[in-house]
Image (tube, rainbow, N blue to C red):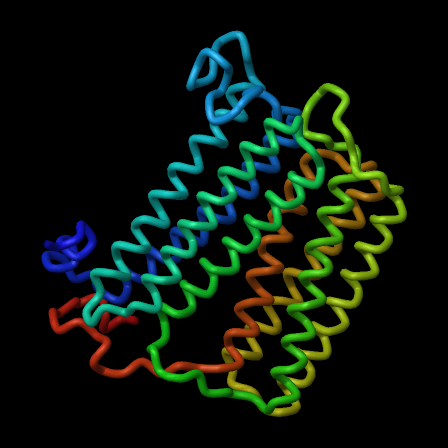
Length: 319
C-alpha cells in the first residue's frame, strides 16, 4: 500500500526549479518566523496568550479581551502553520523528484522535527513566564532550522555524489573557525537579549543575572573576531584563486557583517530602540546564512545527467 507521499510522487514530477523554490520557501519562512517572534517580544506581547497550547484556559484562539498583544502573539503562533506548510511543500517536492533524492527528503523531515520541537519549546516558554533561558533556547533552535533549510536549499542545486573540495585544506579549516566563532557570536547575542531591557512582556519578567553592558561588550568583541576571520577568508580566497562564486560568497558575508555591525553599535548608543533590535535579529539570520553559504561554496557535488527529469521544461533552458 502506497504512503501519501509515494502516491503523490507517482502522479507528479516537479522540475528542478520547483524543488529549489520549495526549499527556498522553507528558508524564507524560517527567517520570517524569527523576525515575527522578535516582534512579539519587542511589542511586549510574549504573554498575549497566557497559556499553551490554547490561547486562554477557555479559548483555543485569541479573545477580544486580550487586545493587541493577544493578537500579536496568536498571529505568531498561526504563522507556525504557514512554516509547516512551506516545510511540507519542500518534503513533497523532494520526495516527488525523479529520481527520488532521499538526502533531500531526510533534510525536509529534519526541518519538520525542528519546527515541532521549537513549537513545544515555545509553549514551555509561555508556561514558564518567558524564562530568559527558554527564550534563548527558542532562538537557538530557530537558528538550527535556518541551518538545515539553508543546507537543503544548497543541496537542491547539487547532486548526491561525494563532496569534492574546491580550495586547499587550510582554507576549509579557516571556514570551520569562522563557523564556530559565528556560533559563539549568536550565543552571546542571546545572553545580551536575555539580560537586556526587552523582556517580552509589560510586567516584571525575570532576566539573566548578567550585567547588560558587559555582555554587550563581549558580544561586540565576538563580532570583531568574526569580521577579522571574514576579511582573512576573503583575502585567502583571492590568494588561492578560488572559484568566482566562492569569492562572491565571501564578499557577500563582509557586506552583511558590516551592516549588522553598524546596526548593533547604533542600537547600543541609542539605548536599544525596538525597531533596531528587530533589524538586528534579521541581520543575525542573514549573517548566519551568509556564513553557511560561503562554507558550502568551498566544496561541490556535481549533478549527474540522470538527476534531471525526463519531461521537458522550457524554463530550464534559461537556468
